[in-house]
Length: 440
Picture 1 (cartoon, one colour):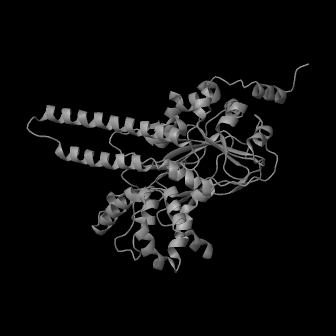
Picture 2 (cartoon, rainbow, N blue to C red):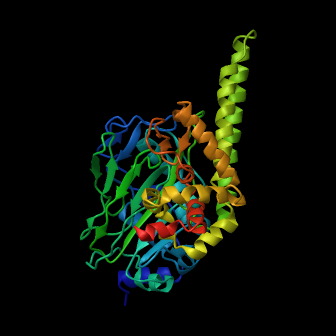
Picture 3 (spheres, rainbow, N blue to C red):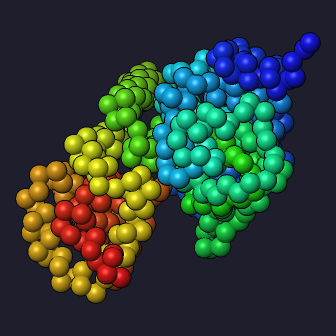
């Protein structure tokens, strides 16, 4: 007697069988009905941004593709190797491409790259292998063993509350929904417009994607309710445009990743990107001189040199000292680390903070782990005073601190500008400034 289809799926899952990716079978792409541009949102954008800010949800995977993707995700060795708890009922899966050929092949296939580049309006490249298929899973369980028991290859639509808020924020991202959203309420993304108001983008349904230029637009995913599970998978990209400054970062994943593994991929990716830029400027010089032997593109070379200095510094600064990170992880959970900016706002506004700050900074000057960042702080303050703040890059596009702003630009502001949440939290903790947050 033939077993029911669900039993067959469970048997496949148990045997850890994985599909072979075939774009004709697993993809079901239809272009998005509309796109949001930076101009639509009233956003000027920075020198690192492109014109498309995001898309409405669009079909991406077929039903067969959804099941094949879920089957790959839910193999026991994948969950044991890649899943980490992010708090009650929430798990993050990283480095999936290393463990799943199907997931790796899906996101790196020329047809997939053509699709995401078409939606973005520019050629894209994946930032690094660990950024392939970053997955957020929300279920009722609290352990990986619970996850293995609860998940099924077949998406379920029965209604049990799962509370979720997505905080992932890479440079450019495709967000793919792998759960049935029939009974789901919420889950929309709100994007801040230039005038301070928000525009709502509906959350994707099963097998659908949305694309967002996350590093350039402020956005927040609303809480979603009403399903036994919510699985979203995200792959992040940068624009493959010669000469366009790459302002990618790893501060969003650094609090929970294996740092040696992350730093290896990050440095390799950034240096490879720099190698391409060096080859581009070499070609520019050769072409210029071949046209006019009596001149040299000195301005272009100067601009290139300044960009690469900034690029290398950002590359290095994103790799926070492992000992400091380990100490922060020992005292604080991932959610607390990611809430550091909110803690800083409260501490900064406390009435006692101004009185404590001189003594704290005197001790900070001799605290070795932050010496590099102190010099960065001085450089940024100089740029603010000289009116050259538009040349300063930040975690969220172009830096926007006004030289006439009433508040002084403080050391904590500099750490936030660079996305150094662990360093800021370690500083607040070391000098007992977190007590001001508790006292508020």
